Image 1 (cartoon, rainbow, N blue to C red):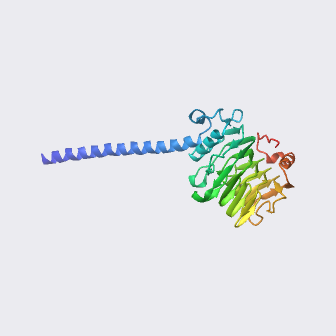
Image 2 (cartoon, rainbow, N blue to C red):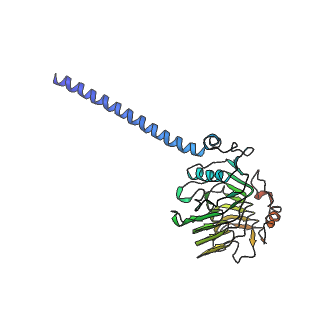
Image 3 (tube, rainbow, N blue to C red):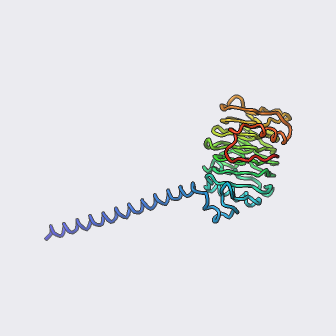
Length: 291
């Protein structure tokens, strides 16, 4: 009798253990699925953002999401910093953006957040005014319009502002991969980096800067340069402002190649430069505006 009871008890324990194991497996599977579903949905951002975020358009090259106001631009920045990589998604800015009311603009794809922009942002020949960034309170101490960039930014001007940090640049601090390109853009804001300051980029190791110019004042307690203050894969057809005594690049550390750069004093020099760029330098489908 005791043996029979013991056998039944063991069977109950084994059955309960199997149920518990099955529940654990289901929970782990569900958790793993949710985690990866979240990750993949963050990468698959082509069409879903239209309804949930509210930009007009569909994010394609033929029908890009439209940045039609300062509020749209701030929303775009917030979405990237919340994890919206916008991989291969297209944006078109249709108006000038004035950030006068933003006391300290958080870089788009800030390094401390771990996110980056992976789409195409076309400024449409429009400008950003009153861009104010002070990275003293940022974990990365980096200041620029974009922090980490893995996509394309083109046809955009930073017309005014003040950008300051340990490392500072007009458009981007670093390139996350070889898809990072800044093309036909200019900076006219004040840039100061305690360690390094670049008019367009700082440590843009994987990326390319094409047909860009800096007209703003650039300074640094360490190294400063009008286009790139640390490194870049390629600097092509960029304009060096002869009115400012700063080199085009940091010649001690730039490991990439420099092609067809010019000395110029105003924005019309960008039009001359891009009219002479070899087609191999221009990403497919890119249309460069005349400033």
